[in-house]
Length: 192
Image (cartoon, helix red, strand yellow):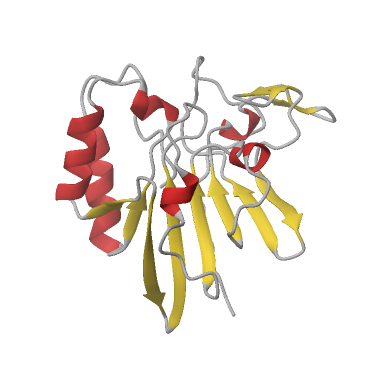
């Protein structure tokens, strides 16, 4: 999970914890990095404690080596870059760059701030897919991307063997409106 599972104005974590319990009931390995809304909400520490109690591993500028279906990979997570809480050096400290590496970063702007990210795949959200998209024009505005943003959702090739994937997420920001931009929960399969 790449952050913003709560809003700055969220006053109760009951629904969030219910969703997490549903997810962890069928998926044993769940990882989380913070988004800008977690950093702007007074319930942040309660949220993080509740996630840990529900066996969600929080990757706050840390990494984990995991094995899935016989494939070893690095999962690296940074705290939100759009609020300057990330520590790339710390996050990549114990990473074996010979293994496939996935970076979880709430904001795709991490690729603008850091040009030499040692990850094969970068997963992010934050943009809401542009939230409102117009025919032939595309997205109107996205956080950190400004008007008529170029990176809002989907797959972007950064280098020969490096990709950024931006999920448009489930929620909205500012106004509870989506237009030509469905809510999204992605399943990504990595094969060798």
